[in-house]
Length: 214
Image 1 (spheres, one colour):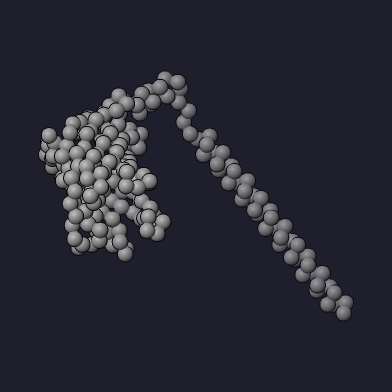
Image 2 (cartoon, one colour):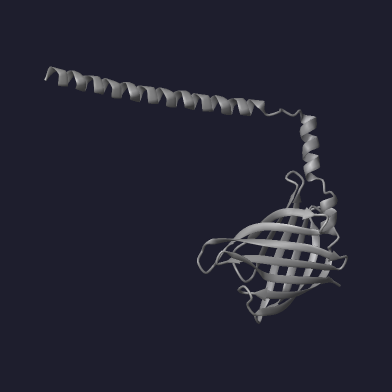
């Protein structure tokens, strides 16, 4: 009985000791983590006021990408083709796009009007080039939904095309689904916009718009 009692006491002491060691390790780890975060924060360069002003000016000044967007200012006739599923029947629609630059030539705004599925159609898109992140962001809203489509990507000078990726909420199930947009500069007065959606885990072309400048 005495040996059993002694054994139980030793086990309890070992258990308490282990818990203390674990807590000590957790405390040390937490301290080390905080130290690392503090060091990382302290390592960030501190810019003087002149350097900060220069950085903000570079961020706010339109450049060559904004000139690329400004080249599209005007009225465009849009021939639209839609597919609701892979290899499905194509549906046609037409619209007109009025494109302009806003806020001092920093952003492009396009307003679409036409007819789709026998109903009046209106849509608005914006396009931005972020001088800091070196990428484009596009948004789109229309009168046939209540959501906003947002996609980001880069322009490839070799192919004269811009690939943008984002996601949208499927109104049939309320879940997010990815989509991809490919915008190609065909020539000075022609643009092609292709939209690719995902259905049953596979990507397919859901829309194509051929834009002709008036």
